[in-house]
Length: 304
Ligand code: PMP
Image 1 (cartoon, rainbow, N blue to C red):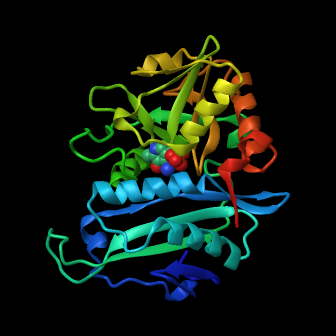
Image 2: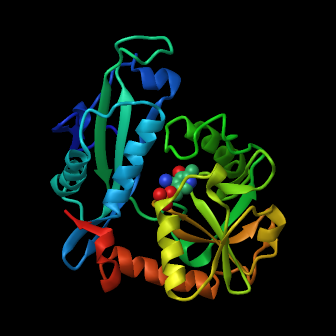
């Protein structure tokens, strides 16, 4: 990733990709306090557009607030910067990664004297969970690692430290040949994927875990709105693993994963074992939105 052409927005300036470096004593590298976002830009008839830029930027600031990191830029500056990195890297579509991290002024756990830095990179990124995953669905395994207890880490924050737990879960199931991990909360109820929210469909109703132990996903919120538009009721509640085994359809949502059908959990086939009809319909609606083909959701797009 480091050795490529292009530019990265770094503390207010565009710098050549290869020069966007940090010192090895950067506090975030040692103690894992940092917050970030992941956004996608899509190609539309009117040029590249970033999906739900305002909401992602709001979440970045909320994540920083939770960890008491003071971002030294305002939202308007970072919104403009995210558009600029897409434009200046000549991307028609791609993934955008803003990250807020501490400087290297001091070691030890107090962050009081540390500077706060912001970098924003953008690059082309195709389907996250494999080439055919959006059509064929993926095989998921419940991980032995639990999602963080609400008093262990902060689920409302998209923080660097959350992802050590995600990576433990993901590597465990990937090493056993599965595509993605499902994490349960500390009480054994379904929380989310390693980098996705989860939904199931049973008898034409949509179910998803409440937000106690999962990230408040922006794709999740978008799908909830789209489902309402086609009259599919949503129930947010505690969900057990076996409810997923017996669901008619299941899918993950996330900026990287988009809407990825789940065809199997813990070696149990879900529904027909193929992408279900409601999942397919929601996918079509979602891709129409991100590609600027849904007139009623043009406000979800920021043209760069
Ligand atoms: N949960 C986790 C743990 C994630 O990393 C992500 C990806 N950001 C999501 C859920 C989905 O969030 P969003 O739809 O906002 O990308």
